[in-house]
Structure formats: C-alpha cells, structure tokens
Length: 351
Image (cartoon, rainbow, N blue to C red; front, side):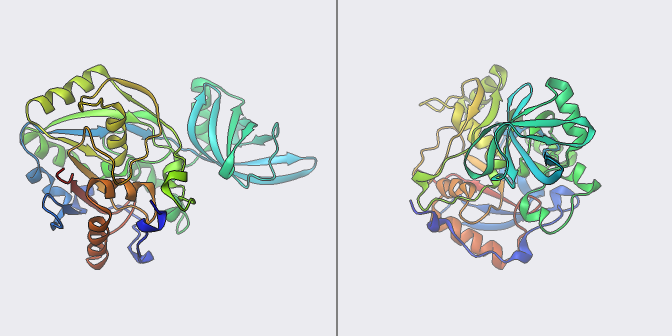
C-alpha cells in the first residue's frame, strides 16, 4: 500500500500541548459499530459503551526520563549530543537514536551529567546506535533518572519545554513497570472515578506490559508500507493475565484494548483461534489494512499522526476511507490531537 494513502490535513492549532483536566473530561469520538457511525461524547461516557463481562486491557508500563543530553569530546573540542533511548539491550546497554549521529564514530564516548558515560558500540540507519554505558543494572537506571528528562513527543517538545507538570501528566494511572520512553497515551484519560464507574458496570480489567519505544514517533519514510521496518518493543503477558482474558472471551465478553500498545501486544500473543498465550519478549508487529484481528474487539486510542503506523493500524480496524472521514469530522469539530489530546473509541468492523 502507498504510504500517501494515509495522509490527511491537520491544523497545527489542534495539537494538544497539555492534557484535559481532569483527565476523563477529554472528548471521545465513538466510531462504529455501524458503517460511518460517529458520535461525539466524552471519556466519562466510556462505561455506557461497555457491557458486564467485557474485559478492559491496560498497559502498565512506566515512562522513564529517556531523553539525555551529553557531550562528545574529541581533543579540546566538545559537541552536544541528544540521545533518545528506545530499547533496553542488556544490563548496561540501550539502543538509542542520536542527534547529530553522523559525526559520531564507533568507539567514541558520550559524557552525561553525574558521571554517566556511554560508548558507541554499533551504528545503524536513521541515527540509531547501540550504546554501552558506564553503569549497569539498577545503577544505570538511577543514573538515567538523574541525568535524563521526560521524553515528550517531538510535536510537543518543539513548542514548549518539558516542566514539572509533565512528570505527572505523562504517566498513566496504571504506570507501574519502568521501561517506556513514550506513554501509552490512551491510558492518560483514566481517573479513579472512571475506574470505579467501569467496575460498577461489571467490567473486568487486566494489565499487561509493553515498553513503548521512541520508534513510535518515527516518520514512515518509505513510499510503500512493505518497505517500512518497525522497531521492536519488549512486552509481557503473564499466564494469569492470559487466562483472565481468555475466560472473559469464552463467557461472551469483548476484549477492549486501551491503546494501540495493548492491542499490538494482544495481537502478537494471540494464536490462530484468537486465544491469548503467555508472552515475554520483543514484538515488531506492523498492522495495516487487510490484517485479520484475532483478539481485540474494540480499541480506545488517541488521534494519530498523518502517514503514521498507528493511523494505518486504526484504518485496519475499520477502513482507510472511514477513518479519514472520522478524522475529518474530528478536525471540523475541533478535537484535540495526539498524546495529550482527545480519544476515540473504535469498534472493529464486522467481517
């Protein structure tokens, strides 16, 4: 498929720079279940769309301060280097995107605050590299926490500096397992009051873990989707969580993924019959129109970038034309877009 098929116009003024307050006051566009069916609601209306026995699947990953600024020293000269971590590669190693990357050579060292440093072990395409740090394990985690900053998406970071509010705003209510370098943003809408209303409907909730990587923000530079390479992300579904999801489905409940991260891990772990298997490892699943969903019935997600892999994913749930019409409606109705923006509740199209 041509990547240009997933392009659309988005006024820059609709990019949200702060979340709604309270979080569940955000708007929510309900898409489906009928063809071209749209309803303008709010996140607080979500329980009304759920049924007793449904199961809501959250991602409990926690964002770490994954954007680091260091210096490369060559003789007396020093150059500033931005490092965006995206995948843990060992106790003392991370895969990261470097900027600028071309002038860094294999074996060179980047120095950060607090005595932390990293050596370039490998270099890949698009500014990606493997870094070997001077610290390992929990000591590396602590050093990154001290030296790094919250990795706001580029479309926010270009417009304002990260501040103290982002430390709370860019974590979900369910954040528990450190390792993400981007928030599972659909989860940002949930509050204790909303969770109580969901429980009162007889809806079950489970948590899985997918450590979101910075690759989620990378533009698709290929002209055809077949030529695009997804960056791997690490995830885990425990045996107990898999059993709970399968039991809900067996009893007639629907699987409702909160966020594309939850959906991608569920689909990665589903067998041919749609049963979720325990999972621990990396996934680079790339979902485009024509994909047959095996696990998920509904998706709650935010509005995504034009030409992005995530807009391709939601187009696979309905159709590209229908999602473009839904997004055009959202633009006309002044919905707020991207990580701190409003939400969609998308029903999977009937076979």
